[in-house]
Image (cartoon, rainbow, N blue to C red; front, side, top):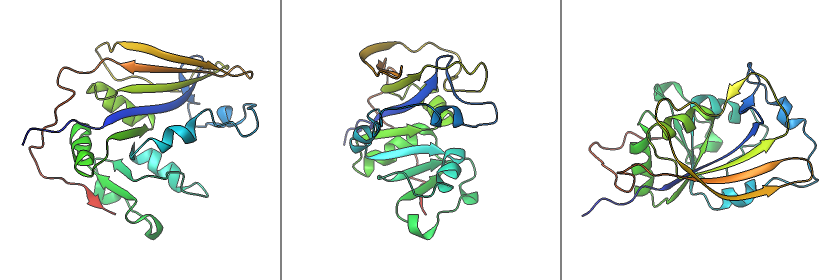
Length: 202
């Protein structure tokens, strides 16, 4: 049987004018303190309704675990080099899986689950997938503030990735959202499943 296409991979993120998502210590209070129109989520809920799964790293997973309410309405895959160190609480069993597989293998397994669209969460995970040219679309909301220093959203390493602007949306509070489609890698539409899945159900 011929190999199936990998799921479509997208990311939804907010960043400062100078490209940071957090202060040097990881604090995101600068973003939470912005004035926004009442009830406005900048399209996040609608975006998530189109996703079949979320892929993140261990640090993002740890932050999500500390929230009062689990924020993801779809299955979550946590990528970590030490999957045995991750724990899944009883209320998330069946919703969260932890793996040490590389990006393309994770996507290949998600294809096997019948998932065709995946959201990346966390700058580290985004960089890993960008480095392998596995990201199809970026939805970026630019916030009108300069942080000067902090945690950068991008930094995938050497190699340019072309992008095509799809649309731009503006809000009265100065937020500007840009949607980009990225150039695919030459072999983007085929997936190799050389090894069995190492995804473990939490």
